Image (cartoon, rainbow, N blue to C red; front, side):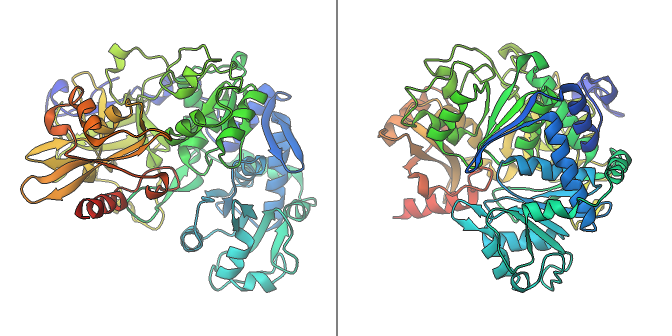
Length: 568
């Protein structure tokens, strides 16, 4: 790890560069077609994908996955998809999602990952913004019928025939195919009919197209799921995506002998789940155990039945798993790669002590992590930080107002550039996205310490300024998460006439728990400086706390809710 500076000493400037990318071990081919071909050649007949459906279990080997992706690619070519053509994928975590994304890459296209949490208005925005030419989707997700949603958005879909759609609403959209009950008399193909379209496509054409894809080509379009604004379309190159897929395997320490079996219910349409869960598992020759939508009791039963050893969940899901009715009876003894701080690590059938590479910082714009420490990094090494710069990445901290580099240890805005940085935002000029030196200004606050560890302190707009002091809501939330009665917490700043803002903790208690506000404040007094202890502690139900699609609590909505509660 080296430091660059032309005018000041290395230790004085808040700028750190990770090792050269060429020195990173474990990287394979840097395109999605190359990645899939490589893991298929390595692991051919090992199980790659396991899923339950209404029609029975699906079990795909790596060779099966390759063939299913080729089938999708052949169908897309038959639909007229050319290089860089965009294919929307609107599905839960199911085998066809994986085949669709890799198939799009094999056909030379760009996979557009769309959230199944989208409302009608949100889906309308995403389709207009992404300009997809083919949409592959799952008809029924929870209580949504996406075929009905789409025909309401574009009535032409309801009267056109497959392959003959001409939409004034979505002028680039030419083809639709879905998994689920057929919508007869519409422009929507069934999944089988879509695949049948490709039967006449020469396999050699797909093979040649896949081989022609370059690491610098656009691979995917993911949308941000931030808590404060309209989603932004983020274009990432094949190299950026696949570096992270290979990298996560290395950081987790996975190998073929580990027989990784990853349970994932969170959408692969979020970059973190795609790179971390899907990428690291396939890179290690493991199997993905898919649950289309999260339901805690079912998830535990699935983990037990499939001998899952690597569960991937969000904080609020850990709490639901622990509260599920079968928690005390399920056998989770296969668990191995489960962070020691999660409830599953404390399950009576689990005997493992492992720490995931969670000391990390990143965003969708860097296709997940830009800094990180590997699994089982000792506390004295990570020191509570957010990691060190990864190979090929450079981090700098600048004054948010002037853009000038800060001194080492001084707080400012985190800026990143490097091997996994996005190509850009959809529809936004490069000069509006990156500074003159090619850095992306993240809007996040933090600092670099004397040896180059990054400390992330949250969104600059979320830092609470109270009585002249700055309070990181993340620090307060981290302390609150140690309280046994707290299920979900988010701390916000609420305007105050003399202090500027006051610290307010918003808490969803565990079922059956009834913590008191003063009890919470007393708990925090032993752990935080007095000015960081919330002036107010408010309690909410699960239904009160609005989440974005990736389980981020909407800060602005919660602040308004807290203000209203305090006024009442």
